[in-house]
Image (tube, rainbow, N blue to C red):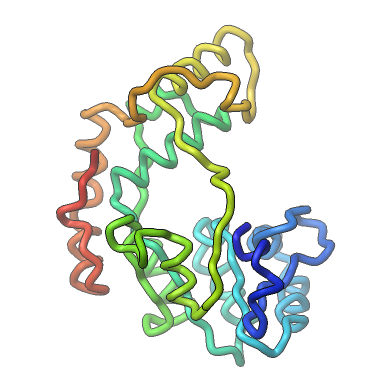
Length: 246
């Protein structure tokens, strides 16, 4: 969204608007490319890549991380002939799991109780190994997702510095955290009413307790991610070993 809002200031760096396509109607981000890859529509992906301007171009979508190694390979093939860099932000595993848990609760896909018993087990090593397999190890730019590590303490400023954007990037916050009480209240509402799907968080905001999965779930996440964190430091020099998981 920040790139879209700054589009007129980004030339000669290009952030092209998504075209009309059968995969989503987003006016920002390139989720449609990931959806097209998931659908096996490689002709559409190749056609879109071919239409990009002959300048430095930013393609951005969080959905890329969900793609299989084969799908990322197809994207890499479509980008053959371009000098590609892949920017990846590595986040403390507990903080990442807590963030994903909130999204799953907001969307009604899991309850807090279910996530407490079976917390999200994500792997930075799996992510980066998959990306390196598609684009090459040297193409990866791995940054630490932590305010203290960001340029000027700001994620957007940090990303801009990485990709060479020399104009300010900003946008209104759209994905704010929920409190623990809010998560429980949303679960209760769904249980009482049978309502499924995404809820409007503002209708359920209550309490002040910072959201976190319980201690037993956090222990599972730490144990699962220990080797990943060590590998990340040894391979890319990004240190999450002493990250504050609070």
